Image 1: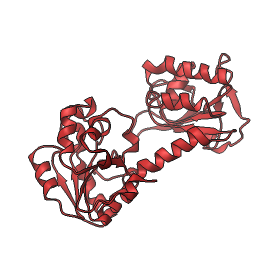
Image 2: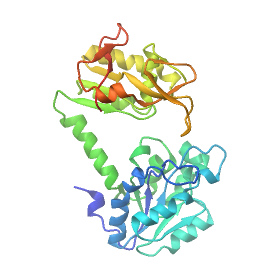
Image 3: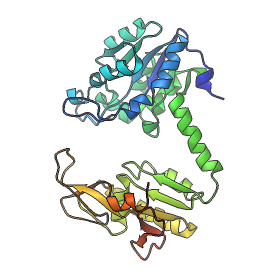
Image 4: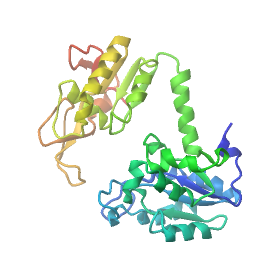
Length: 327
């Protein structure tokens, strides 16, 4: 049963936390709109009901307040194209303009607020900041699965300012939570899980849960390099959480004790900088040269789909393998 689908948003202003943290090129054009398109069904359902929509999100990691390169105004044209309707923009996420534009919204209209992270209070989970955001809408909808794990004002704090029947997940969040519950509670063995993303710290609890259920765990994305370094590999200047190396080793030890095999990519596409014009090459994932960084799985990992092509990275972790898997 879906609280969101069963709710009528007629004449209500829905304040939706979305994840519009999308990549932009030097012309501020969106190069991957996956996160935006994923929220469209939620937004359209509210508009179809006769409600209005107030969208709030972060973009990038601004350090010193407002900066044009991190402004959500650059997303408005594409958002309008996807929705087939006008999208108004408030040059702040709180304050007079945001409040006035939110109050003036009529059924069927959409308002996009400026970057939440222009305020340090967002990432600090500040209660006063969350309350100011909450006053903009009648209903709170969390549809930002990519940031739902963070204890930020717009995700973990704001819901307390809405009645129980006026706070809910959107369709994207409902779908992701439902899928996670199936994996964690209904999965049948043999069962292989694929984990990606940038940070081990974001996935610790997920991996520990999977250790109780999975037979194999494939680790990719930026977080793979933390595991690789933890197990003695050379990763150059690849993304790595040095403060989580012990955590990675501990997870590998737990996996070995439970008979769960952890797989890491055997090779990587590497570059000398994170830039479209960078020099690129390929290297074993555990032997990336100094000054180079791993950016994605390499050709050997991609092409060779044989589950038997594992090479033990470190004898003390017999269940950790460099996997040439197709994934």
